[in-house]
Each structure stands twice: as C-alpha cells, then as structure tokens.
Image (spheres, rainbow, N blue to C red):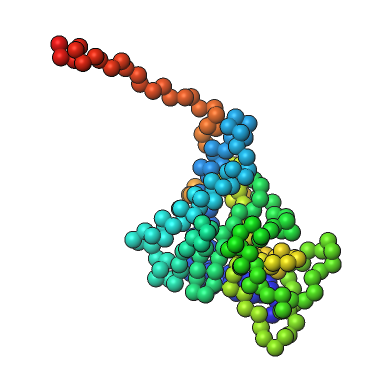
Length: 239
C-alpha cells in the first residue's frame, strides 16, 4: 500500500458520509463575507488577522450546523469536537483536522513550509503517522507526496488526516486533503478536493459556486448618519 492509496480510502469514507461536501459548503459560505470586508489599505488588515477571524467563523458555523435539531451528522456517525479551540471532525475512528493554507491565494500551497509544532493537536496527529513504517526521507530539496511503504510485517493505518483550505481576496476557495508527517517531509500524500473558478463563479446561478463581491468595499461605503436629538429637561417635560 502507498500513502496516496491510504489517503484515497480516507477520502472515500468522508465522501460517503457527505463530510467533504459539508466542508466545501461551510468554507465557501464563511469565506465570502470575510473576503469582502478585508481592507488592507484602509483598515490595515493583514492575511494573518483575517485568517484568525476565518478560523473562528468556520468553527462556529460548523458547530451551529452540527447542533441544529435537523442536522443528520450524529445519525451518520459524525462527531465534532474543539480540542484546544481547533475544529476536529470524527467519522467513526477517522479524525479530520481543519487548517487554513497560509496567505490569500488559491494556487498550490507550499507544502514543505507547513509546521506542526505550533499546535498540540496537530503535532499529535502528525506523530501518528509513525516513522517505523516509512522509507528513508527523500534527498534534500526533494518533495515527495507518495511513498511506497516497505513491508514490515504489518500494514500502517492512518486515521488522522488534515483538511486544508485556501481563499483569495475575491471570495473564491480551494481545498485539499492530506496525510501529515512530523518529520521531513511534512506530508506523505496530498490530494485536491476542489478549486473555485472565476469563470464558473461569474456564470453561476446558484450559491454552489461563490461569486465575487457585488457591492462596494467597506471603505467605499457611506457612513450612516445616526439620529441625534436633544434630551428635554425634566421641568420642560412636565409643562
């Protein structure tokens, strides 16, 4: 078995429970308003700042969906938790960790630059890959996404996967599924899930594909005038 084959098995299990479709829809609905209000030149927003806000928005949106009385997730064996504040999706014994790709763009992330030491949960998930079943690391400067696992008397079982999403300033999104690894390389296998297209977004007639912002930027909108009136003195009120 290869790491990519194992990842595809995880992907199939998530597709059967419609978890990947849920992640795609929630990511798109969360990112559109965040991209619209992103104002680096007027409000001095930063990619790191909007990423932190989006991280909380996505977590709260999915928790609200999960807790809805009409939600089908518990009946499908899906469970949501937030260890250390991070969104974690359990599908039977499979754990899906949700993270954002750095920056505000849709092109392929720089996979070698991901680090897991900044999060206790991610560090533990990456450690679960196990060095004992891996071949020697690739040569320096080489990035490998699919290892042939040599037979060691047992087949490795990966039950921790990372869902990585990205968004650009127009509101478009992309997503990937990957198997993390604690040491080099940072990923054993990565497979794309979706990538929004600007042409498709312009022609879309439903909310399945996000459109670009239709209204003006927040910094270009008129400031509403608050109604102001003088408070009458008590002696005037009794006359």
